[in-house]
Length: 219
Image (cartoon, rainbow, N blue to C red):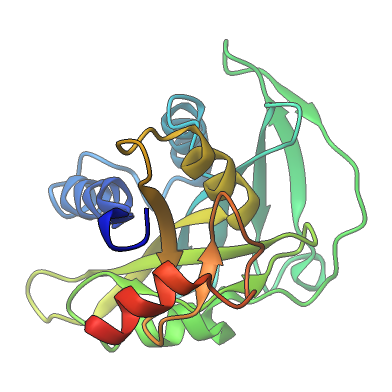
């Protein structure tokens, strides 16, 4: 084992490709980011067929309007919408059925939400590419990662808004556990600092085993 073990690094390239696709569609006028109802239903269907993702969202620069969809633990897709100047920024939610019908969904969510104040938003609008956050705790009480990409005006280059794709770390860990990498290989997700945040054999933040530690020292 030891020296012959192989470690695979999960790059989550699918998330980056999805963000780039959404931004390209919006720039060409094929994705109606200014029509929140239509946008929400579109994002819901994208999430429905991306079982490894937890959230997909778009936040508007001018208004702070947030349109996002997330996957409930029973698999249902929930549409989440908010705007800072409406109902004190309190989100409203509805389960989106496969036929597009909406059923109101009630849970305790805090008011005062403005995505433009979030670190992932503020970092994304300063970068020309997809950014990744460090792990943090979502409203659902589960730890996760966010990938974000700014949508920019093609003429001025100024940000119009930000698309995001989110992962829950426990979902990633289950995915890693399902991978078969030779006889002794294992897969981990690491932060830029080398901390394990998802693994089939350790919990997020745990000290890596000797094989992983040796591999990190060799990078």
